[in-house]
Image (tube, rainbow, N blue to C red; front, side, top):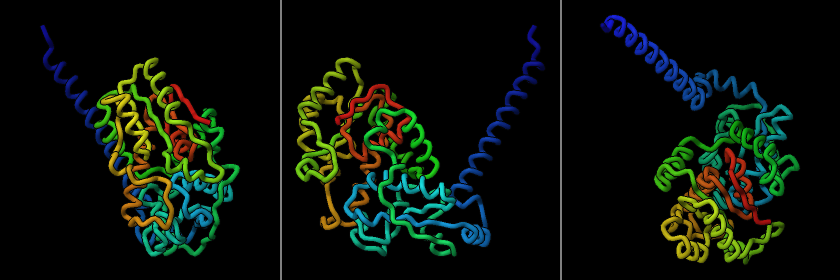
Length: 327
């Protein structure tokens, strides 16, 4: 005979424990949200006192107004690393000097904070408003920045910069959530995806100083075909601004090929501060580029040419199974 009262007691205990776990998780989540969004729930008076008790270094990379977003990202990580070791709190400033993201208009918002959190969730405006201890730091690429030559092959470097970036320069939650939504929409529940990131003919024709030569499209396509035959991918995700490369890949791989916002990507990536594009268009393009990099970082395998965006992919990733880097 079944002991109904005993069963009921067990069910009651299970429900009670489940509710307790849910309450604890909810409390942790609320506390995290408050601390992340409101400097640990401080009142305005406490917040001002907190700002005045710290020393800040405002980072400006003024020597490269036409640099791409992930070129800034790589340089910033090195400068953040250096300043933290000196005991000051680094704050990224992308508004007070002319660059392609503000089109020379230094009265705009700090464009960096549209996409990334500052260290410890401070903000440039509040630092300038409340702090009495501010240094200004001209940021240039450092020996202690992520190394574009080595990071692809060095698991220790990847792990260090992955954790460092996650702690001190994390991507905004809403952008990460959007990337996760897009990933699900593009690939359903598949994880068997090859990511391919390539520069376009506009970049190649400009031949930027100190940048790597890019591989021929035919060579890339042959390598993708080879890996696709070997590993039988469900999907291939291509990130490039080059319409000729896109057309060739669509013809070769058909519905297996996935792209993000192909119409937006028709706007060339190799641009400069004088390009006649409005700020909101530049920021839309930049957000799209960041989403591409996040999605590439989540692929199973990766093929890419060297560039700052590729280095960022390896910083963001939790690891790839197979990689092919064009040197």
